[in-house]
Image (cartoon, rainbow, N blue to C red):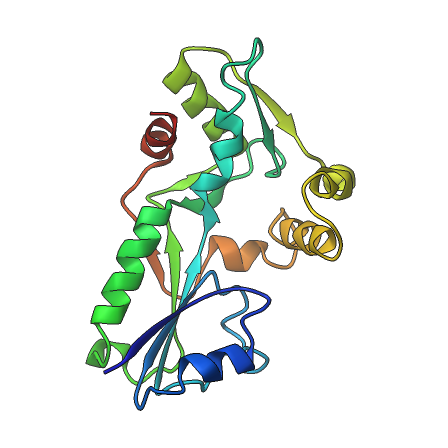
Length: 211
């Protein structure tokens, strides 16, 4: 059994997949971060191999690494796209992503999948977190008060334009808006097809990144 791991990316199209599978007779393909994997059509990996596994990851805890860089400032702060401040979403640490992908790859051909192809897993952390939870975790870790600076809907374009050029700016704005309260991906993100929970908490992850 040949195993191929495909990272989710706008550039990961059918041509890339065909090249990866060129020498594989019966591969298992595992892809991470696959938003929209539940749809029957329009997903590049569907039908690409006899066994396809989509691991749909929650919001990455590593996204808070930029906040850690401000902890030495006179007034420590964090920017958050998760609004309002008490809105809770699932988050996951990359180490749990690795564990889950490894488990799925080693389970190739498992009867537990009941012949589902693609087989979809929603990966969340131990619990959901809000901006307030992140703020509190950073305050506990540093012993200092941390200011939470919320990036509101009408500020998203300017916020992402500081780091990206078009079309990436618009794509990140669209993605962010999609999981906010009342938007198209909120229910899907907070629910899930087949939820598995990782082990790493936000508090432990932040302390690890600050070490």
